[in-house]
Length: 299
Image 1 (cartoon, rainbow, N blue to C red):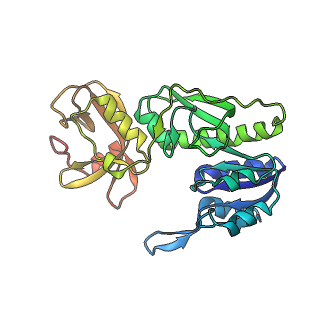
Image 2: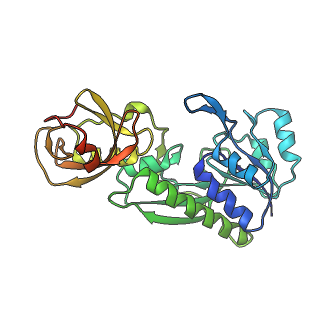
Image 3: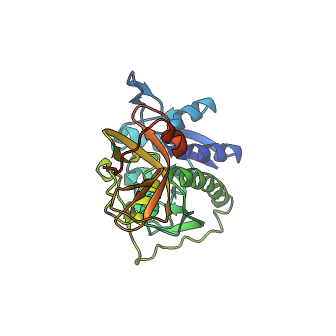
């Protein structure tokens, strides 16, 4: 099929590669414009742009698709289909209507649960037992379109957003190839009206750990916000990111250090497994403890 691919972050890269490997004709790759990054704040192409250029594919990165010129350029590609995954722009109706067979979105949740920007983070933070991938026909609403294929995966007791990100990206790549191979036979299934939830964009204000909350809530916060923005607390006078954790036995005042990096919460305790000091690389807890004098209580 002749496909327009629309995606930007690392999550989208395996999908683009899978479409190329499956022999589809990629008419053009759309992604977000290069952004300032690194210490020098130089413009850096997105992961999708890097991969597309390595594959010799044409790339466009318009700041908006609302203008008549951008929409005409898109329609002139005469694509059979657009495949969209974590692109980062709302698609106007003219864009949705341009490909002969519409636009398919790869969404990292079991719709209608966790429509919106941060479905992986929110699933972990809510304590969901499973999540998954949906291949959805796009329409004007936010992730409201009918679903062609879905596949579930359990959320493990120690899974972080980084872990699920990689697993779901690979699942999405495999599932979209299946969907395109079976497109004529798939029946779109409207999303249920019950069970709709919205995965709001993560706010950095959510990242500070409140040890008066239950151990379950703190553990989900640490795992759900890892690696970005990273849950954090104050250890002594230093802000430290907490990147992996698990529930453990223990009891004490909220924030009390019970030994090593086992921390008491409002109820129960968590064991922090991986941390990152400001300006440093992330390290396992035992390595961190060798060079850090722990206080009796964390802030």
